[in-house]
Length: 118
Image 1: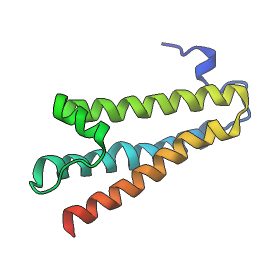
Image 2: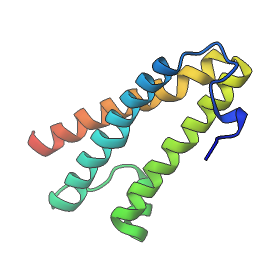
Image 3: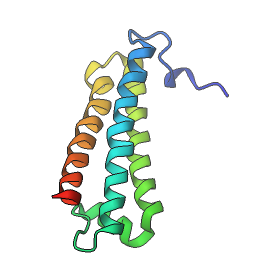
C-alpha cells in the first residue's frame, strides 16, 4: 500500500533516517516506557492510581485496551502532524511532536519508576 504524497518525506528538506530516529525515541519513551510503567502502577500497585484525569477516566471505562488506545491515538496524531508539517517545511511542527512525546515519555517513565520502587 502506497501512502498519499502528503504523508511521506518525498520532496521535503527532511531526512528519512533522522525521522526514523526521532520517532523511534518517541516510541521507546512514550509508547513503551510510559505505557508499561503506567500499566504496572495502575494494575499491580494497589496504593497508586492514575493521576491524569483523562487517562483515569479512560482506564475506568475501558481498562488496559482504553489506555493503550488513548496512547496510540495521541502517538498517531502527533505523527500525522509531523508528517504534514514536513510537507509545509514547518520545522517547529516537524520536530515538536516527537520531541514533546519523548520528553513527556521520559519524564513519566522516570516518575512512574520512582513510584514503583520508591
